[in-house]
Structures are given as C-alpha cells and as structure tokens.
Amino acid sequence: MIKLWLTLGLALTVLTAVPLHAQTAPLTAPMMAAVPAQMDRIRLYDTTGNWRDLRFGPYEHHAWGFSPDGCRALFTLAETGGLPSLYSARLDGSDLRALVRYDELPAGEWGVWEPVWSPGGEGNGDLIAFTMIRGLADPTNPAAQDHHIGWINAEAAHQSSALPEFYSVTGREFSPQWSPNGEWLAYISYDERIPGPAPDATAAPTETPAPGQPQSAQSVPTIQEADLWVVSADGVTKYRLTNFPTGSMRHPRWSPDSELIGFVYSPSANNDTLWMIANQQGALPTQLSYVWNLTLDHTWLPDGSAMLAAIRDFQETPGNRLWRIPLVGNADSDATVYLEDPAFTHTDYPRFSADGRWLAFRSAYTLVLADTLEGTWTALDPDLPGNTPAVWSPPPFAGESACAAG
Image (cartoon, rainbow, N blue to C red; front, side, top):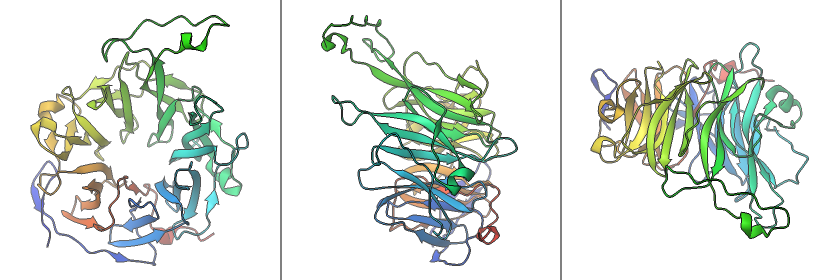
C-alpha cells in the first residue's frame, strides 16, 4: 500500500492507491487524456481506474482537449520532425476527421499547434483556435516560419475541413487560451527590440539603411519578448493587456470566473515571477512573487481563491513542488506547499478536473491522479512516463454513454 500526506489547506489525510485496468465499456465522467513520452498513442482515463488507448498510425500524437460536450477528442498528428495536422475523433477512435486545410502552401510547409476548443455558450460560437505555423520563403533561412492565432468554425470543419481565419497579424503569436465563458481568447505576442547593455535596458533604434545600401548595414541583432493580448470571440474587440518595457511573459491562465488571467513574467531567462491581471483594457498587473524562481507551470484552484504552481527551489525548499499561490500578500513568504510529502518533489503540469474534485499532475514524469474529496491517489502507468500535461473533459461531459452515436 502506498501512502502519503496530502495538505489541502485544512487537515492531513492518509491516501491509498487504487488499481488501473483496461476498459472497452463506456468511460465515465470526468475523463482525461494524456500522451506518453513515445507519443505513439493517446490514453484516455476515467477516475474509476479505467483506460483506453487511441492510436492513429505511426505519427507523433499530442492530446489537446475535447469538444464542448466531451464526446470528441481534439489532437494533432505529425510525422517525426514534421509539422502537425489537426484532427478530432470519437472517444473510441472512430470517425477521424481532419479539421484544417490550407491552400496557399504545399502540404508539409504548414501546420497547426496548441489548438483549444471554445466552450461555446450563447452567442459565442463553436470555435477552435490554434497557432497556425507557416513556412516562409526565405533563402537565407530555410527554417523561417511565422505563427498566427487562427481559428475555424468547428461545426463546419467537421463537415469538410475548413480554411482558417486569423485573429493576429504580426506572425509572432502563440499560446491561445479561451476564457471559461467562451467570450475571450488570450494569447501572447512577441515584439522585437534592440537589446541594451543589461537585460532590463534597451538600445536606441538604428536608422533603416537607404535603398541601395548593403544588407549588412541593417543587420542589427534583436531579441523577441512577449506580452499578453486578448481578443473577443467574434474578433471585434482586441487589445494589449500587458506592456512590459523589457522581459517576457508566458503561460496565460484564466481564472474560473473569466475575470482574471494569471501569468509568468521573466525579466530575463529562467528568472520567473508570478503575476495576474484583470481582463479589462488598461488594467494594471498585480505582482504575486518577487524573488526570481523557475516556474514550470501553473493553474487556478477550482474556487478561484488562489493559483497552484509547480516551482523549483522556491522558499529555499529543494525540488519542484506544488505551491498554493495566494492572490494577496507576497508569495515569497505566504505561499504554502500544496502536497506536503517527500514523494512529490519533482512535480509539473497541475490540472484540476472541471468539477474541481480531481487533480492530475506529473511527478517525475509519472501521471498522478489525486482525489481531493476522498483523499486517495494513484500513480497512473508508472511504466509509461510522459512529459506533457493531461487534459480534462469539459463540464458538460456526462460520460461516454451519454454521447450520441451518430
């Protein structure tokens, strides 16, 4: 029997492991999908210990989410070293559909990454947003690509693969994230600047050479740094939400009420701090931690009262632990370890189920499932490690048996 002590802000509870077994019968709710390091399958798990493998040929599989009703898996497939294509399929692997087509470039010179299916809702549409990757005809850099935030109408794409439309324009955009109410899409966009003598300093712009001057005259080295943008689902309203003069942000994470966005800001590489900002144009960001750290990933607690972050060597505590990050005060002194046990010192990718009861995370690459109500946990497939997060079924999912057969 495996035991640990789980701290949930109240009492300590003894946890015990539960067994796993393969299942071809309908999976129950909630359910999650994960991919092992081999990337040769998508494994679906429910919380009763049942699982099922979906395999779609000799391709690199990556699970991204589910349809708003949870009855279709959303994933990408790619040849080794190639650009991925976007698909969905029923939970038994049938009815495989390619969702995006793009006629302006040959196959293999464009791809789709980071797809997120909108939760929909009244007036918000059934949309899938993603990072669209396109090769550039640059003889000086054959690997040159641009990255736009694209979208398709999911219903139309399932009838016949759809041409993408675009929310962004510069070609340096990534990490789309829908708000839980489906009204807004957050993403990051990179700007170029000329570096100064220190990470927090910029240099004056260099004049652009006149026509006819040698190319070397305008070869000024630049760096790219990201800020947070938000666009409405209909594309009508778009604004920049952060504007750090130097440094870069990443990992936008919406609060459960769609009012706040948590993110990581790094004034320089591997020097991370945690922040949040209200989704209002002109809002000022709030800094939650000040001492530089290495934040691997983070999410929100289901009630929105705090964030949960996997941070390395935080508060002079060795290892990668899960920390509860309060929304007021200073996390450098006020954050607390969420899972207080020596077994969980190399954690990453915390993700709560839609009902808030279940927490999935990686521990030394093994997928762990904890039941925060019953105080039980299990290490899922310790012989099948992975290094990507699990993704949970959405709130409306009522189990596979509730999915329409057609």
